[in-house]
Amino acid sequence: VDELVLGIESSCDETSAAVVKGGNRVLSNIIWTQMDIHSRYGGVVPELASRRHLEAVLPVVDRALREAEVRGRDLHCISVVNGPGLLGALLVGLTAAKALSLAWEVPLLGVHHIVAHVYANFLGDEEPEFPLVCLVVSGGHTEILFMPGHGRFELLGRTRDDAAGEAFDKTARLLGLGYPGGKEIDRLAQEGDPEAVPLPRSYLEEGSLDFSFSGVKTAMIHALDQAGRAYSLEDLAASFQKAVVDVLVDKTFAAAERYRVRQVLLAGGVAANSELRRRTHAEGAKRGIRVLLPPPSLCTDNAAMVASAGTYLYRMGVRSSLSLNAVASLQIPGCG
Ligand code: KG4
Ligand code: ZN
Image 1: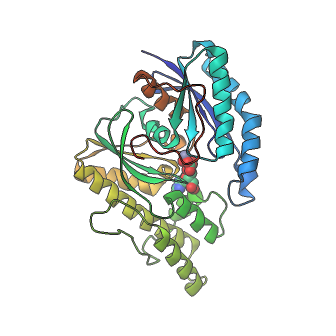
Image 2: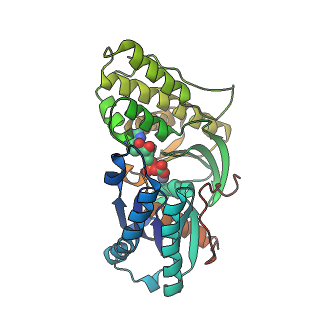
């Protein structure tokens, strides 16, 4: 069936609404970013984010429906991120979704933000095959998930300190780049030597699928202190990026082999990183494991991924009640 699903995302600093058909075709995907407001503070200011979501949410939904040429009452379901994220920001999207659900008489479905990121991989012609392993790397998350089927997740590993995106953003700040700085590090790294600065790789205990990025960050601070201007920005960016990507790729494929999966996926904002994408493809080819990556534009926060996740959950019979709440530290279903 070609269900029409509206997705709404407001967990951080993007207000987004999208209409997806049949779980994989993006009819519209409107993203209203607040980067301009927060970048001058070097991070997201929750109070300001909530207010901007409040201004943006209904105009963004309206545009998503118009662009898709779909009326609210024709929707099969409204899926909305109800966590994890900034509580005040989540409440805005969730409240809007509930009101629209009631007004249009369309079922409501709460979606976990990370589950939505994984489903960015289902937007497209090629459908991922189960069982699979997905590396989720965003500003707030670094997780290796095992996924035996739709809506089912097992947490295989996660970060013990900073998230990968957080490490990118903190390092960017250290290098005097803007916020969020992951994209800029990626750009600078293209011109740098990844072996120029010696940096540690933290593999933790033998066989562990967990991550730690605090050591790389500290080593970057020392590299800057000791050498002054000795390393170029490009070399610093390239070396940092490789130190992080080395460990991400090694552990993801260790998980893929341990769980004998058919496919490896990436998700989350850092999955837009060109080095991580290149190395994941190369490693997959070497080990004979199929790799599927969302296009970079669907790696960062957007509502199309929310609508895709919502469609598959809707097919499984999942529904939420109008009393659904927002949860800032919501656990991935089955991983609590
Ligand atoms: O998934 P996302 O949009 O928001 C969260 O749910 O956190 O991820 C944002 C993160 C930021 O830390 C940003 O610096 C990082 O993704 N990011 C990148 C790149 N593009 C975005 N990191 C490395 N390389 C990139 N090209
Ligand atoms: Zn995200």
